[in-house]
Image (cartoon, rainbow, N blue to C red; front, side):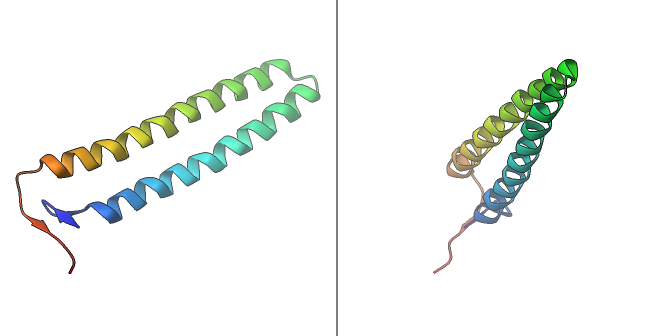
Length: 84
């Protein structure tokens, strides 16, 4: 469905792609944090765990963006085109 020139379905898929990428980066940060901690690099491990938490916040914000996309599309005053 397109609303005000935005294909909302495609837009949501693009947000999902960003989320998938962030999920992968979080997994790498997690693995590296444990490798660093296990090797005695405590500060590095702590920083990477902090980065993981920030990436979790990014993913939550992307979920909020998807919810906002649905709400904004419903409230849009412009032209809506549905595929039939």
